Length: 200
Image (cartoon, rainbow, N blue to C red; front, side, top):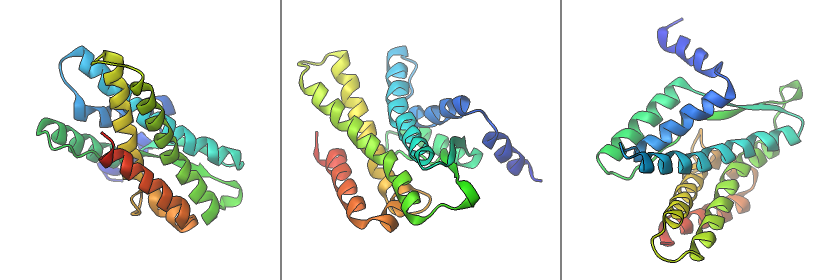
């Protein structure tokens, strides 16, 4: 077994909490700074975008009687970390997230198109809901308060993560949602597009 494959196995075997911490880091690194306040905001916003998204996948699968947990991929983590770090460093504004995925194991190994689509759909929809709640909450705060800034960051992060994940290319959620229900996919990606690129 090659060294890379060994690392892949070790990353898959990490406990779920540590996997989430590393996944959050791979996204937050795009906004890292030596300022503890900015660092805290970056970690908080990345956490709101990743953890609820993956837990929504996990819980949906479990509701259908499947075993499920978040798994970190070494290669995915490395690619996500490097691209986001370089994007943040050079101010390119490009963010990706392929650090991990929700592993699902159903009885008899069966997972049909409907279950796959519904499970995939749950993640981006959760991000859309968080984005909308954050946007409305920020509307009640006037001025440039710290809380308002954090809420707008959470809004921006979650709307982008929803849109990115709904792009219909493997291994993103969008391809599974599109195969299951074209209308649901179309509505979700339109809303996430509007939130990401048209709402300021």
